[in-house]
Image 1 (cartoon, rainbow, N blue to C red):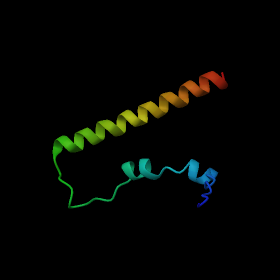
Image 2 (image 1 turned 90 degrees about the horizontal axis):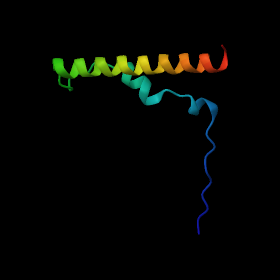
Image 3 (image 1 turned 60 degrees about the vertical axis):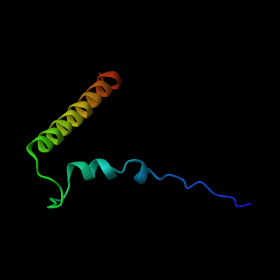
Image 4 (image 1 turned 180 degrees about the horizontal axis):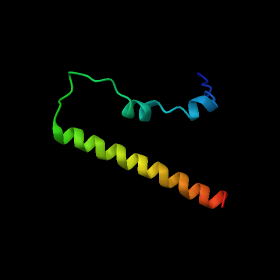
Length: 66
């Protein structure tokens, strides 16, 4: 019977932005389709993520600081 150890998650790995950072900072690729609808959809998604994070920070600051 094999025993497996759980790898302890480090603080750096916990706060890594991995896939989220890849979503915002992607290299331009010629393999992906360049459709205006797709570009607008991704732009709206980025805006929604930014507004969500800003509101989350606002509510946390309001709750704990003020």
